[in-house]
Length: 338
Image (cartoon, rainbow, N blue to C red; front, side, top):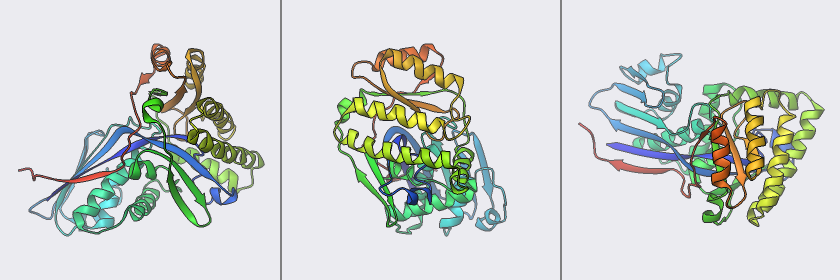
């Protein structure tokens, strides 16, 4: 048996970091807004005729093998923790090979690791016949990722990978709910510019520092999160109404408040790109994910996509052509390789 799964990465528009428990519980009506993009993560699981477990990451150019699941259990620090931890959770009854790949640059901030968690968990779910639904897969992926990075994880990154499209992720005492937002994708896709600065960052550290500061009573951080929550609520309304001028204004406001949360969330390179993009027709800009490098997203005026892309590329950043991915994770059976 051979199972093949792929799941899309995402761009976050507003409300990021607010999705980490328990931060959203302190802001009634908290929501995050994001959309899936056609940069995918991939996982292939195939049965072997032996108890051996073979793990390989194509994008990391890394592989590791174990004689059995018991050998994997006894390895405290596997060199490929993501497939290793998920394999320990799903515990296939026979040997298998598991290969992963990602179209997200390292440390890009477009939720490549979370999307890969969804792709890999979905493939193993089908491979083992576990029968978990999408929400349970989200819960498993989130918990296992926290075990790997050893700090709390946000919830928003898993939903674009699961469902695709443009989403409002509602966060409250009753739990988390994903609400799709209908958007004219032909129009919206012409307003998206994404670049990679080539400077990876560690989102777990940045997010954890912010979370600790909030819980420890840092009034400045708490006030900023109040503003971020209000901005995210406004962003939802703007996107629902296709009011891109207002969405751009809110994007700028979100980025401004984010920069007040954590020193190092921006860099001189990012600041220069934001300035150049604004001159070329960007309505708003923000770093994807937790900041400090990685990808920068620009919401641009209709007709300015090429002009903004050229200005950014001339400044040395790598343009990543993307569009909204309308579908989330897909899983299929493939012919067994020899």
